[in-house]
Picture (cartoon, helix red, strand yellow):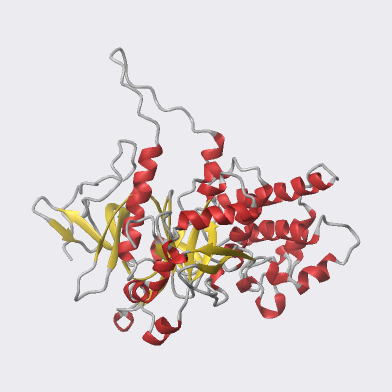
Length: 466
């Protein structure tokens, strides 16, 4: 595994079955099974598998599925198991990486030796972490849209993409339309939804006798119970015009696109996911030293730390809002450090979050690579005029703007009060930890841009030393 593009992370919905992608191995020929997001299999008969590159296998899958050229950038080959997932670079040789799987597990996971010995990855055709959302909106091929839709749906249903109830209703309604057809008044739709509720909604919302809102006991009674909210949203799904076979395909394509557009509002759509732990805020002398399991989601847009149990965002930062580093000393746990602006009792501070993870090195490398890609794709800055100040940049195209979710208590909003952070401040002689005040940047690694919003805040008072 060389370079950040071959990123590894936390296993997701595609790991639900333990399967192998190589049915026979030899110097001459082998049958390779490549899994799609909907669990269907693409069998490939290939020659000389040990030396075959991921790029060559990728091309073979595209030819079998008859996908357009955009699929070369939109999808990548992944090796995935219940313990680890890795996006392969085009030059990687999947067979050789698979042979190195036990070493990767020992290096990047805390799995017991018995689990490592039994684990075997499968080869999967999934969304490329480095494929920008703005390019995804330019896709019109129905099969490419379907594959992206199936993967996004799986991430929503397994709560890998935490969603508010309102978003679950809208997304679930689109799944109803794809699987059940247009809503027809008078049909027993409610019974159908009740029987297949876990096909439309995340599992944690389907507990307690299929009560949709059981997990949201604080919500008012006017919201209804059971599948009523989903049924109401199903009624409101708009239909595309067209009744021919090609029209029906176009209609499904429009619903796939609508689903993806809704997912684009989620800040962690298209992320690579990693497992880690953070310190819990101290709640008295007897409750110190406890940790919380988190998922770290990294994409071209930034970093999000998600509570693995509560299914909500604890911290969301764009690359302009953070600096970072990782430490991996032999006598200590590997740590990814995130530093960002905050306040303590109304005083500006730099907050430092410590994420314990054996994947800290991978996360740090992926952050750095995403920033490099973003800088490389930015248009050149306009030349400053000698006759006046430089003009402000024009508005971004509509498809690059993601609507902000501003609901009170939204699962995608940061909950910094739930974090145990370290605050730092510079007092002129050095950087000191403070009790609650602060600041200067602790790390040198950050996005260098004149338009960034991350700043070093100078203290106005002498800090209280911790």
